[in-house]
Length: 453
Ligand SMILES: C[S@@+](CC[C@H](N)C(=O)[O-])C[C@H]1O[C@@H](n2cnc3c(N)ncnc32)[C@H](O)[C@@H]1O
Image 1: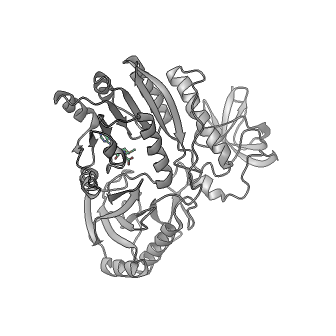
Image 2: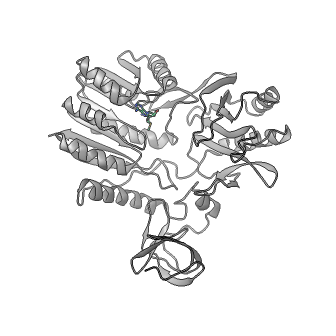
Image 3: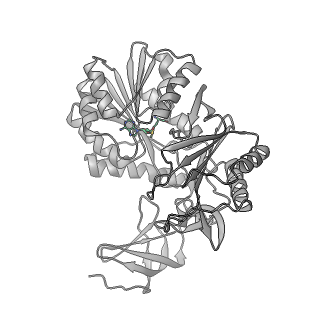
């Protein structure tokens, strides 16, 4: 039985860290999750909330602190989740991520002591993000840009986002000031009123080209021309200003309607020596330099030859397949977002690549079509979103008897689940390499390779 109630205080030892960066304290087997508490620390804790299976606590004071603690972190970064691992030294973040992958492989895939490789570190530990998606709300009567407090929709105003390129922060602030000056109303999600929901800024890591996207509740944009003129005069690196209209009440950022307010509907950046056009709705890895390491690892694992036919499933704008197309016979890509497929086709042309075919559709359906067309891949590379692979996709992929499945994952839990499915269909997990694409945060990225038994 839980013997504590709200506001009780007691001394406790922090024994673990959740995958989202909260410290874990256990009293008679009952866990409390505590923000800003690291394993090995001794704290005086105050109970915030108790539930049936777990509770939440707050550090009142530190009796002993961890040698791995970062002491000068702005606590708003932990509270908002902008950098929910920002209080842990970087080398320990890398260890924690490796252990987490290893633990999920044990729990979900029954792999005891699988030799997960040491996490490859990101070339940049802070200020690495090439994209910001910043909510706009009214706080104390003033239009503000910032980030939501964890598990809430209460906006904490932020000016230095710590993990974003500083050039992006400067543009967000300039947009905020223009919106204030022209009296534009921030979105109110409770009443579904107001105009500006989000400001999205994407900046090419190598090119420095910038796209600004206004996410609005309605199409009619008061003072649009003045805002566009002022912004482009201040930041000549802005090559594209877009508006997307999202009148839904859900959490999705982009709406179905897009308008080009200035310049092109894309920016160009380069990765691994190739040029890529990126449009507003398309996915593009947010940490370019670390993504290059991730792709290089995937390519090394695939051990490609000139005769290989490779499927690049969940291909986005083609950044993976096009980076190795000149080493293989043919690349077949599939991606559900049409604008991204258009980018991928254009990107193939831009880089003089003629042996890559891109199809719009769901990977699980297109994979079955390819089988019917007798396309016989030697290697299948997958890079799905967090929910992982559809069972129909796994069955179709395994039925090709491809030499290897190279699996890039942003969710080690669904990766471990899908590994068990592939293993039941004749594949063996050989290697797993975490690559840190998201320093200072709990997010884990990895590449694994499964070989035909
Ligand atoms: C993690 S991103 C990877 C994109 C690309 N490989 C890259 O590295 O930039 C996952 C991609 O899968 C796409 N996607 C989501 N569900 C899909 C599905 N069922 N079939 C095909 N693509 C899908 C998303 O639009 C997104 O572009």
